Length: 330
Ligand SMILES: [Fe+2]
Ligand SMILES: [Fe+2]
Image 1 (tube, rainbow, N blue to C red):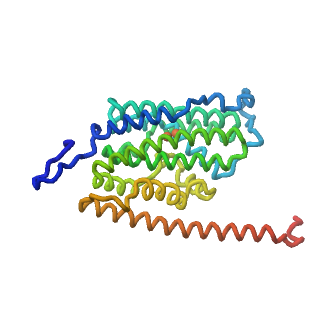
Image 2 (image 1 turned 30 degrees about the vertical axis):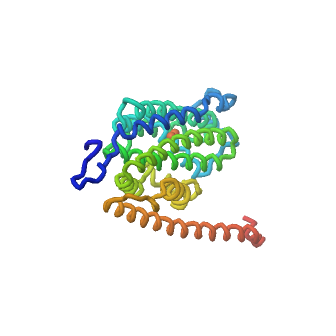
């Protein structure tokens, strides 16, 4: 597709979202990113004093770092997802190209992302809070297989919209995982990684906003497609459905979180899709479709929150009523 198509009715030419169109905004956003991001060192966050040589029959676990199932699943999925960086870099290079600001951003982004698996793995190894042999086998499998999204080739603007959703979802997931850790070094690591994800999110959010100003109809169709088909890149991890259920029941990432912390702040508030002007018929149809979908997600989120609250109230009231004495004697 060419960058501009001149219609026969004398209206202004349509500008499609191409690399050339996005590159100027990408250059400005890359400069802003470099000014905002602070240098940090994974080795300074890790408690090396816990390190020693472990034998096969010595699990070496640090007693303070015992994980509930949902937190263990979140760390497992998050780390394996971060490990898969070579595949994401390859897919993004294929979409963004290697030249100019978009390619430069992608290389810088990859360098930052590599710190995440480094620091998380070091902390997990030192605390032995996960089964390290099973984790290494899962990493080998994951990186050898790649990830599901590689099989779908997406347009440039679809890629940008997806990455905005995904970076925000990753920020939320890392931050909520950190909140449930009892170990202060683990909390600091997850917060540090989440801060990086936030800056990545801002880059993609604002790049999509720049594209909306150029061709809102093309971008809203991409938003509709990506919101409708969204799944995290770790969805290809073996046993993902079980881990996702466990992560949801721990309150780290569930339907309500997706609605309240991703769709509302990004799609409804930042991109303000309800008030977009200059949409053609396809753009209007896409807006209507995605708004209906988001409203439906909101209703499911409300029901989920109500059920969670009822469960909590039930737990609170059973904790307040001591059990009859005969049940306390085994
Ligand atoms: Fe990351
Ligand atoms: Fe990121």
